Amino acid sequence: MSGATSSANAYGLFLLCFLSVALGAMDSVLASAYLPDITRDLTGGAGDAATGEVGSWLSFCFLIGGATGGILMGFLSDRLGRREALALGLLFYGAGSGIGAMVTSWQWLAVMRVLIGAGVGTALVVTAVIISEQWKVQGRAVALGILSVAYPVGVVTSGLVTSNIGHWRTAFGIGAS
Image (cartoon, rainbow, N blue to C red; front, side, top):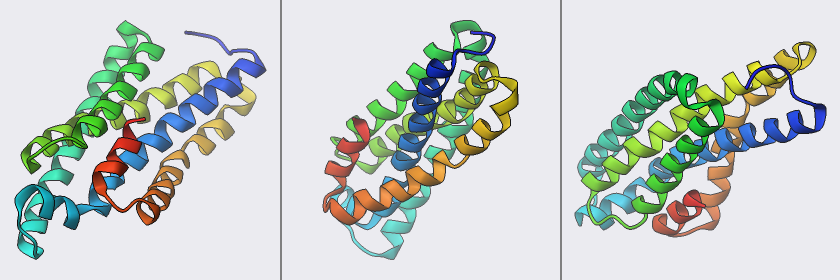
C-alpha cells in the first residue's frame, strides 16, 4: 500500500481506522469498569484486596499485550501488509473479548487481556501508519489529528456500554462484535 488513495476510498479507510481504534479503546476500559463484578464472579471474593490484586494483573496484562502487539505487529505489517496486520489486530481484541466473556477464572481473563492489548496496540500503530501512507499530504496532519481522538471516543463509548449493560460478560460480548 503506497501512495495516496482516491477521496472516497480515503474516507472509507479513515473510518475503518477510526472505528478500529475506538472499538479497541472501548474493549480496553471494560475490565476496569466492571472490575468489582469480575472479581466477585471469578474469585468468589469481594473486597478491596481481591479487587486490587485482580485489577493489577488485568491492567498489567493489557499493557504488556499492547506494547508487544504494537511493536511486533508494527514490524510485521511491513512483511504481511498493513491491512492484514490490522485485520489480525481486530481479530486479537475481538477474540480476546469474546473468549474473555466465557472464562471461569481471572487468570484466563488475564491471558485474554494480553490478547486484547495486543490487538489494541496493533490498531494504534498500524492505523496511524495506514493514514500516513494513504492520505494526501495536504490533509494528512488533520486526518492523523482526528484519528488521535478515536481512543477517547472509545473510552466514552465504554461509558455508554457500562451505564446500560448490567453484566460484564454481556459487555465483553459486545466488545467481541
